Amino acid sequence: MTRINTSNRYYLNGIDWVMAALNNLNKKHTGLGNHSQLILILKGYLDQKDFANKLSITLSDSNFLKGKIRRAWNLAPFWVSESVKFNPSDMKYFQLENESEKQLNKIIRSCATKPFIDDKTLLGFDLIHHSNQTYIIMKFDHKMFDARGAEALLEYILDENNVDTQYNLPAQGAKLHSWKEKFLSGQKINRFLRSIYSKEIEVAVLGQNNESNNSHNFYYTTFSKDQTSIIDKHAIKDAGYLMNGIYLLTAVAKKFDSLFKKLKTSGDILIPINVDIRATKFTHSKIFFNNVSFMLFKVNQNFSLKETLQSLKKQFVFQVKNKIPYHFMNASLLMRIMPLNLLTSFMNFRMKKNQCSFSFSYIAEQAFFFKKSFWP
Image (tube, rainbow, N blue to C red):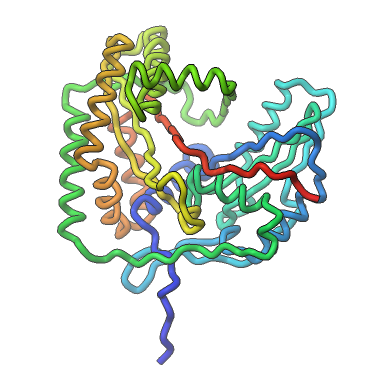
């Protein structure tokens, strides 16, 4: 009898399974999967052939360029990597000599809305030369990477010292145990959601004139070191120590509040946010798959800036104290038994019934620290 070695398998956690369902849901509504992109801006022009060669060396025969999901005999979903060669022709190159910044943004949008070559591909790259700057664009699939994981992977790819170093995917058990704890977590999450989505609640949302409208708009801005320092000082003064995220969330919520009032849209502002559960520094095994959980905030549309800040702070402390992010992760493990198409339909139904005003993502600590000169 042939014995199958499962000790090196990565069984998907509940959040991984949710992300796979979101991938299906995005394809249904936009024709694209659940992916994001990182943009690294460099001074000068990075040689196209050198960069393509670097990608080919680093990504070919890797465990994280292509893959798919399968179910084991115990019905737990696990990841299967596909070792292939990276084709440099898959990387698109754009040379913009006299084009305006508007044209540059148009190209970046086209890169963001370009689907992967196939459903198994998890990474895609584009290179843009514009105004003596190089834009390296890495698109990543959320089935295997979240934002900080993608940042760390990009650093690994660009580091010339990693030519002979190959990262392996982490191994993780099926976690088919502690059922009582998982069901208790589900019970706590259901109670929490019922407290947010009361029967009387009306949620302020932006209307959609056409559900088939697949257009995308991006606004990109940065703050200088001095500007960032001023923001941090205000955050500590008004919100408190380590409350930068809540401070920024308050500012964004009030801007949406102004927009809702302009559009004469009433209701409470409901905001889901993602929470990175890794430490400031993490090993390469934490680069892969989804190391995130979720929190949910509700704020009155008519609150002042100070009232909004205090309300969000209070909710944040409550959710941390009651381990809401942990219970989201633990309870979501129960959802893996659902076939992906069924979970996709269930999530689609819940999102239409329990709408949100906008989503918010805050990454407190970056994972890209590469500062060396680029090859050759």
